[in-house]
Length: 230
Ligand SMILES: *Cc1c(COP(=O)(O)O)cnc(C)c1O
Image 1 (cartoon, rainbow, N blue to C red):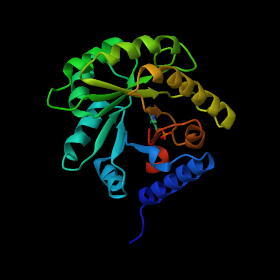
Image 2: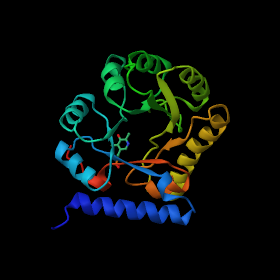
Image 3: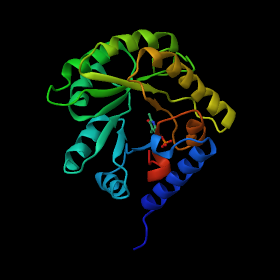
C-alpha cells in the first residue's frame, strides 16, 4: 500500500516532536499531538485516526458538529480551539471534551452551567494574550489569576492549563520568548491550582520551540493535513 500524505506527514511530525523532546530531555509521552482538523473532511480525520491520533481540534462550531456526528462511532476526543461567542456555548459544552479558548468568566460560567450532568467535567484552558496586544484574543496576563480562581469554583469544569497563539515568527529566539511567557504565567498559577498540567502551545511552524519551553499539547494543522485551501 502506498502511504498517503497524511500518513507520511504524521510520521514526520512525530519524528520532529521526538527529536525536540530528546534535545531537551523531555519524555515524549508527555507531549500530545492535537490534530487541528478545521476545514478538513471527516474522511481525513478518520485517516489520521487510523495512524494513531485520537485528539482533534476544531475552530468552527457548525463544521465541527457535523464531523463529530459523522464520526460518532470512533473513540475521538474533540477540542474546541476557536473564538467562542456566548450564544454558542451550549453545543460546545455538550459535544466537546476540551475547550482551549476560554478568555472571560462569562463564557466559563455558561460552559459550566450547560455541561450535561451525565458527562465528566469539561477540560478547559485559559487562552492568554501573552503579547497583550489589544487586537488579539485571550485574557491579559494580569487578569489570568482572577479568571483561574473563578473557574476553579465551577463544578462542571476542570481547569487544565493555559493556551496561547503568539504572533507567527520564523525566529526561534522570538518563538521561545513568547512561549516562555506563557510558561512563566503557568508556573505562577500552578502552586494554587494543582489541577493545572497543560500548556497548549506550538503549531506547525514552531513546534520545536514550544517543546523546548514545556508544551504538553501541540496544535498541529498544516504539518499533518497539508496547506489549507482558503
Ligand atoms: C489553525 C490553528 C492551529 C494549527 O495551525 P497550523 O499552523 O496549521 O499548524 C493551531 N491552533 C489554532 C488556535 C488554530 O486556529
